[in-house]
Image 1 (cartoon, rainbow, N blue to C red):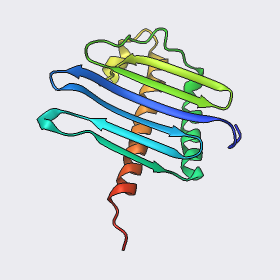
Image 2 (cartoon, one colour):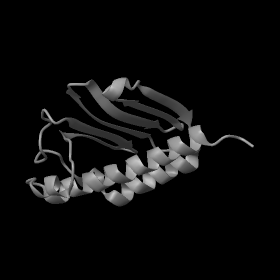
Image 3 (cartoon, helix red, strand yellow):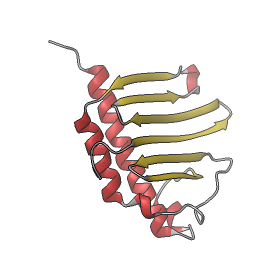
Image 4 (spheres, one colour):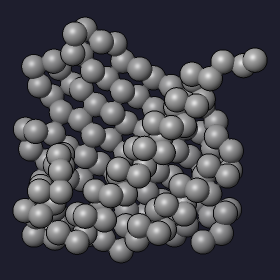
Length: 148
């Protein structure tokens, strides 16, 4: 895939419970715009919203992570449907490929192993872990480092 191909990534996980609508969401657009939102009403926490522009090197690394995971070959038809525990959504546009997955929250590999499509859900599970780690690192680096 060329670097000039379309690129979009959005991930959402959340639920509605006794503390209201709690969620984590992040989004990347091809030109480098990154948006992040984390809403938890636990102990009256407030919503965290961050927005920044990242370099094309970051977008290139996201593309690499997605391509190596081979998530574009998967299908969510046999994955658990969202339920009262929560939902996850992953949407990716990479060149001419466009996927949009919706499934329940996955707490551990035990949840993956109970699924009809263990292999596909495992790919999703590990990709989401990688993406969340990457995003948390970007947010921490961008918003917590004080200039000298």
